[in-house]
Length: 249
Image (cartoon, rainbow, N blue to C red; front, side, top):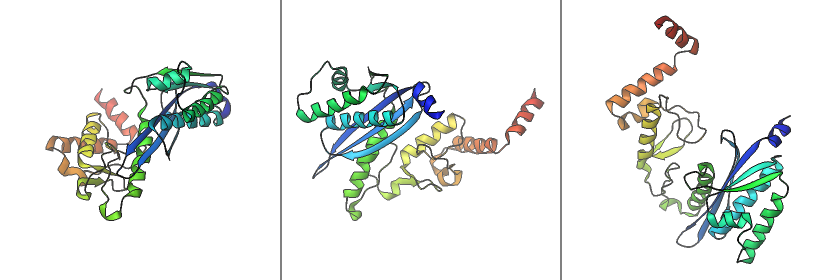
């Protein structure tokens, strides 16, 4: 039953390859996100490190994404390209100039034949699902942290991905241990309060609630009051909230 659901549903493939020059070497990483077309929620995600140019990283991400989609039983997929050159390559309107790129494109076109349809679409950078980008960036950041001597290691914020923070410029979420820079945490809490939510850990999928005591000095008096109200409201059982509404009206 699950196989049939996966097969008959349309999906979007987002992929991103990134490179970053360090003092002694070039670091590359890729991220892949397969999302349901109906709600753009991630169905599958992966990331990995590799060696090569930006174009090689991008096409490797595309290759891996298509391969995983086939193995998951996906038959209808949109290939979302935020790079015009890659879009032209996938469409077959541009020929690769390098042998290694030609080999990667041969693999891509071979895998595409296993889908009922696989349609390339050109999207802007702003339209690109950010899961793939974050996964690629996380891989590079991880490689940088591994390669750095422990005594010279800076801290990385996984929201803004700036990797030159001192330890006292970072905040740690109590239960899960995820760490972010002060500025990003402050901005994140403000946005969540304006949305009417009790702020959770900023890391994607984190279920840990933030406690007011840990972050009180980042907030204005009005924001502290909002935080307390959100926590109080969230503690009321749903049936009590419904009863209160019924009494008021």
